[in-house]
Length: 407
Image 1: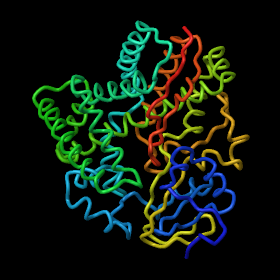
Image 2 (image 1 turned 60 degrees about the vertical axis):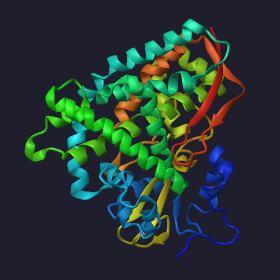
Image 3 (image 1 turned 90 degrees about the horizontal axis):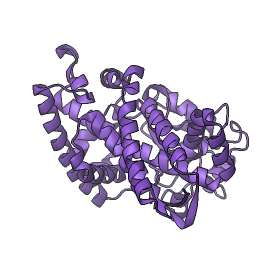
Image 4 (image 1 turned 60 degrees about the horizontal axis):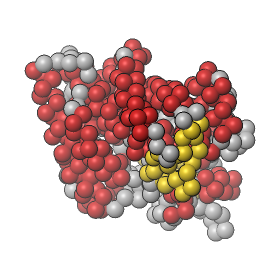
């Protein structure tokens, strides 16, 4: 049964206006047609209550192979390195398989392990800010100069990858991220498969090195698991690809969109400067206001009812986190950016058993970054024409953000 009816608004992910600014369309759909199906059979869920229910529902899962439309993707993937890698991600699995992998990988993200990463984050942030301060530019692209390189440096150090391969690592990651977009084309997946193969080759070299000599990084920690509970090499390398891509693409987005929000809301920027204790709530508000992941996919394993709609087995559902995070039934004045907002039950890290494992690391990186950036600049605003969004739907992030810093 389709939730779409004539004269009711529906979402079109291929609409260029939606990709640049999804919030007007999400607001209309959330108010008038909150759970609906498009012409391709994809279901969209936009209200906070429905998204929260879907993310935690035991009949919904992440294994795309259970989607009745998976055969449309299969010719593009064709048992490629990309397919073999993605299908082994804990992100792509459910039940016992997912629980086993998550339990092992979670060892790298305990509170103690994340706290130990602070020094590396601070070092990377200080190095980049020193470069910016040395130049003291009148205009600065904060994405290319800070928001992009910092998370790559951090996750590379966490995984034990050599920083001299930064350009290669970033190119492979960007290519992989684009292929995971719901609007990606065959050429994107072919390029992503080559990128996956190159990144996995580099990671296998790191794994081999750590077998010979352990170090203080995630690879060594995962290799230290008991033999009976250990990851196979293919499983390990696939999880490392996931950690690399997810571990910095979304953080880049958070830093960039957070700086944009502060630049466009000078009163809130000043408020945060005057009261640094608002840092944690400001980061949560940045996550709500511009969710780094605008959609979260789920496959229906058994027929369910979401938002009054019956959705059958094998259907694909996209939970629109950007819509849920601005739901007026949950958030007071949701279009307002408020660095002190509380409570703030955003869904930017997903929910249920697939809640983002790297959330504590993302929050720590953001905390360090915004402390340093607000200290480096007396103020900043956006240069004319300085905002350029990537042409993405899922990973909503800036391609460029040119600021005018006040020194």
